[in-house]
Amino acid sequence: MRIRYAAILVAVLATAGCQRNRPNTVSSGDPERGAAAIFRYGCGSCHTISKLRYAHGLVGPPLTNMKSRMYVAGVLQNNPENMVLWIRNPQTVDEKTAMPNLSVSPQDATDIAAYLYTY
Image (cartoon, rainbow, N blue to C red):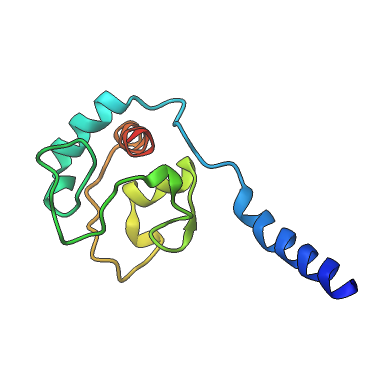
């Protein structure tokens, strides 16, 4: 009986960390402006991005269903602040990343994040 309760406790504790609130929206970002910024910065030349017919790149990872992922760039907790940080200056997160610093403005990064969390 103790083993059964211990197993249940372990299962509950193991999943508790996965039950955090997932980011669903970026309150100060605009997904429509984000789609336009994605086009202007050429993100689709390296990434496949949902709902954008010009975004079928295969260099970087697909950016579909970002709101359901655990991590940004494989190392940052998935939240809007970290997504904006990654978009604006990926080398601060991973100095060896292939993702270039495109000098994305703070508002454009916020709008791009809003788009990625919407689709």
